[in-house]
Amino acid sequence: MAASATRAPRAASAASTVLTGARVVLPTGTVENGRVVVEGTRIAGVAPDDGVPAVDLTGHWVVPGFVDIHNHGGGGASFTSGTAEEVLKGVRTHHEHGTTTLVASTVTGEIDFLAHRAGFLSELVEQGDLAGIHFEGPFISPCRKGAHSEKLLRHPDPAEVRKLIDAARGTAKMMTLATELPGGIDSVRLLAEHGVIAAIGHTDATYEQTVEAIDAGATVATHLFNAMPALGHRAPGPIAALLEDERITVELINDGTHLHPAALELAFHRAGARRVAFITDAMDAAGFGDGRYQLGPLAVDVTDGVARLVDGGSIAGSTLTLDTAFRRAATVDRLPVEDVVQAISANPAKLLGVYDTVGSLEPGKDADLVVLDEEFMLKGVMRKGEWVIQPHMA
Image (cartoon, rainbow, N blue to C red; front, side, top):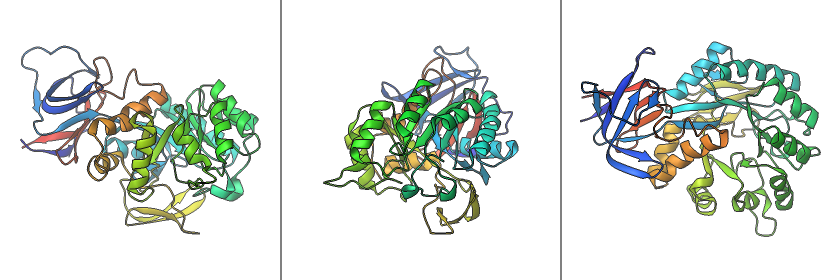
């Protein structure tokens, strides 16, 4: 049997469906010739009545839907500036590439603008289209600003951090900070007190300053290796501190541009699969194509799928989708599929505090899953029991 991807109508529903014959990746390992039963929006623990349609996925993989905790847009739409319709277009683009749970990331802007944007995005979180909000900037280092406007950067001010948290109305999930800046440690403590992930990134911190931030409550490394000092043998910098501490989950952008395969291997070897979260750091062009785009106030050119600032040429996010990250991890990096699933689904779901509903294929959880062929090409996506991409039976 061969399956190819067919975009399903939005109303297509798997009210009660059985998936059979595939390698199914569970938290306990991979089951050959596995069986996944979907009833309504959930994964069921018992088989349905006779006559329920079965989908034969022999020769394929079934894995949990992907969870992206760092994503700025896609499908030509920006989460920082797009209308509700545009944001939803970006969300649907990532759904079609297997990401069934997605956090919207903003880029550096004025505090009042970001607070207003947080209120707007929180409505989409409340209606179930987004899983939360991630603020990347403006509290980052001008030395490691990447694709952020330097004139809008500022030191972390706990009062301003609190303003953004409040504006998000309980939907703020993460904030990236250069914790070595004045106010950084106090801001980390404030975030931790309010249940918001403090992520160390776009930082020029020393090893010792990074350890201090972790002790204060930081738990994530924003796109490890990128926008931070390189690992040194006399001045190890933040990378060594972030890799060695069991309290830290490290984000990795596995697109072949942001990281050399050896850097990814080092991260997995030192942190282990349970402390890695694959992210896209995607911008508008993800799933859309080359051209000229805006990332906040900055112009970006995308050529051959690589996004760079028009002024200066810095890498400006990515055009990555998580199905590509999965395929690269399993084929180029030759990671065990179970480790890839942990990094792309389970770990980020646990970080967000939603592992009770998504991130693995277990009875009672949302029927969020991805079908991949033997070469790890995406062939099907189901979200909450509805086919986003329906496997086509040959």
